Image 1 (cartoon, rainbow, N blue to C red):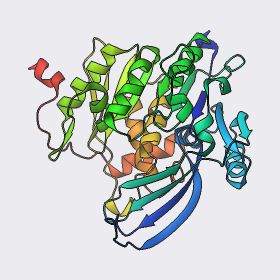
Image 2 (cartoon, rainbow, N blue to C red; image 1 turned 90 degrees about the vertical axis):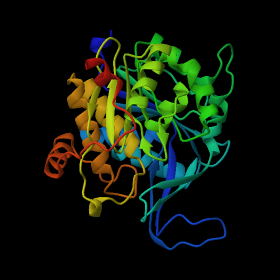
Image 3 (cartoon, rainbow, N blue to C red; image 1 turned 135 degrees about the horizontal axis):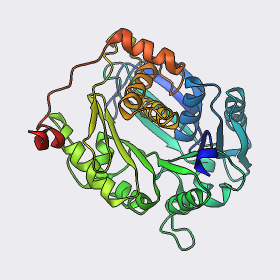
Image 4 (tube, helix red, strand yellow; image 1 turned 180 degrees about the vertical axis):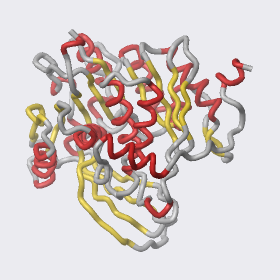
Length: 353
């Protein structure tokens, strides 16, 4: 069954991002200058779908989302249809406004700050997901902590995310879950029951630490060895084939019984960077595309880094992602960055000595 499938189904957060470039992120009662403002689609269901279509317009992509009967909802549907995404499961609801987010990017730090309104996203439930006719191979789902109904118990399941993942796998899809920057304890509580129903998990350095209960990021930076330990801890708690961790300093993948694969990032010039909004989604799109096409894991991670680097050139989440060949050419032209100093050697290197 799996061998006959091709493409991706994305589900969960479809929101409108009001992307704003500011001089810096101010303290309360402070002031910052606004430079750029753009409206784009956002959320992992939107971002991964669009990124995949930028990487390879021929890849089949379907999506599930709940939109409001308003201008933002019509805008998101038009964005999806223009990209060639199957929108049959994008439902229009009268329960509220389309979910939206004010996404601020600091020109000083290039970091992002999100303030969102849940809108119709709060009413998305497992009943909106129909896997009976899809021939897609992968389900990319997100975001726990952002959807009220899915975050709550659903029938006999601990939350709606588990219900969707179980239904997807029963229908023959392989599953991946995207996370949000929420309270670490809340994140761990929502995601823990999902782990036995995931085939892949692609997260950042902070998220893997929260899930494993291991400190991975400190004032000294990201601890690569701690990230590897955390990835293996989470891997053993779930059904995943692979856990991947990304951050600006490196990417690594952990597979049972194998040495971790660790790849340095792209050395994108500072003057090319406009913002990190959507870089994690771009990384996931590159990695999953490579897996879908049967590439070796190191090549998948290199494409993931290249796609994320390409995405940094825009304040929007998907505006500067290009075809996968072009992403790799860009990455090759910029070269690889050196690994940052870390607090301890990776576990795999310790074992190999």
